[in-house]
Length: 173
Image (cartoon, rainbow, N blue to C red; front, side):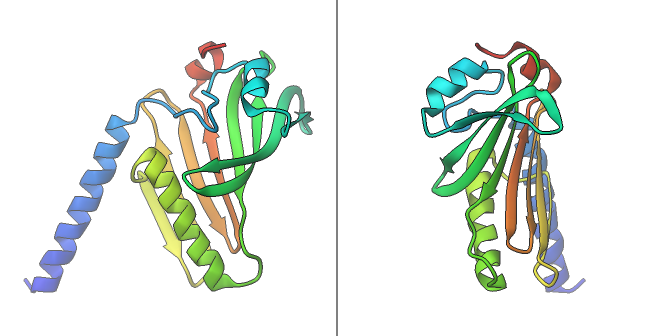
C-alpha cells in the first residue's frame, strides 16, 4: 500500500471519528444572539432590542417573527427568528453578509462562515464543497433532535437552526 493511500485513509478515519464525536457531544442548540431556543417572543424581543422588526411568517401567519442583524463569532447575518403558534422560538434562518459577484470572494466568505459555525457547534456531521459549482453544505445534528444546516449557493450563504420538537415546546420563557 502506498504511503499516500495510507495517509489518506488515516485522514478519513480521523475525520469520521471527529464528526461522530462532535455529534455525540452536542446535546442541544446553543443560544443565538443571546436568545435560547424555546424562548418566548417577548423575552427574545427584549434580548434582541429595538433594532429587530416584529412580523409574521408569510406562509404561516400564526408564526411570529423577529428580523434584524446579528453577529456569530465575528460573522454578520440578517436573521429571522421564527416563533411557533405557541409563541416559542423554534427556528432561526440567517443569511450571511457576502460580497456579490466575485466567486473567489464568496468562496472565501463561505470558509469564514463555516469556521464561525464550526467554532460555535464543532465539526459538521456531513459536509460537501464543490468550488466548481459554488454549491456547498454542512449539517450538524443534536441529541435532542435539533439540527443546524449551513449552505452555499454561489454567493448566497445561509445558516438554519431548527430546534428539536421537545425543546421548541418546553424551553425557558
